[in-house]
Image (cartoon, rainbow, N blue to C red; front, side, top):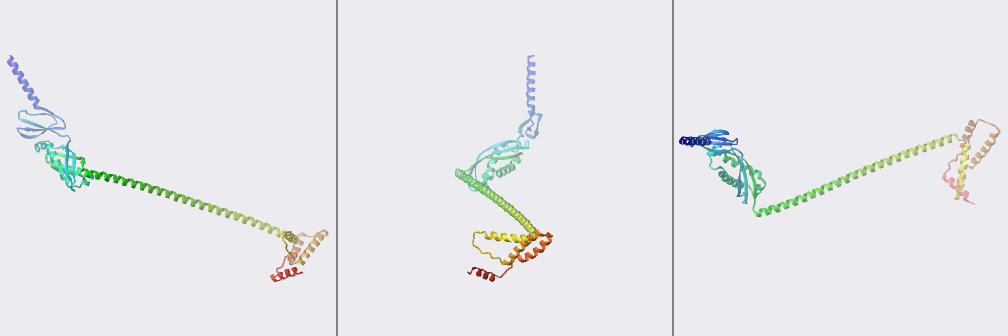
Length: 341
């Protein structure tokens, strides 16, 4: 009985061991390359798969995107400058069977092919291009590495250069160049600021001059308009005064003209300077005065039409009282005869 129990337990153990090696659970991002009696029969997964532990062998492949760090590699540029570069390569397995069958150690093979490809790419570029055109160098490395790894069922998705170490002399020259470039930019920025400030000041002065000229023009226009209006008002006042004088003179009789004439002579005689007043028509003047006295005496004796008498007498007396023009020689002879004792 004990022997039978031991045989049963041993059989159960063998069955359990066989089952544990025959049943596999594969994750979504994994594939199993199955070899049966040494022949690759394909990739299995994901999920639950069954294998024969006696005849089958498996190789696990990860389908996720992986990266491989390439350590510092020394390369010589096109212009014979020695530089040290390291970069990272990102890759992804597209064909699990080829990645297992076509290459033994993908990591080691990728590391070596990346080193040689890096030297080839850097050797075709100058030092300035390597330092300034890093994106172009990344694309060139990715393209060449992808051409090699494609036959292994692996896709190189991206290549990123991390660090470039030029020789110490080149680093010193780069430092000086960077300092000179920053100094140049500072000078350019300062000069540009001064230019903008000068432009702003000139623009302000121009606007100020324009406003001043506009104000002066408006002031001149207003002053001219004021003078014009004042001249118009003066002319209107003078015209009104002349109209008033004309109206008064039209209504004044000959007697009024005689009185004004005598008053003008009186005002001339009252001046402090020594002068000789010689009326040109002394006889007519005396006659006018006599006629004036006779009219005043006659007006008290009888009443006559004032308008008719004034018009008739005014015509006669105006003709007698107005001074007549005499030649200049006769006037000078009269003055000399008056001055001679």
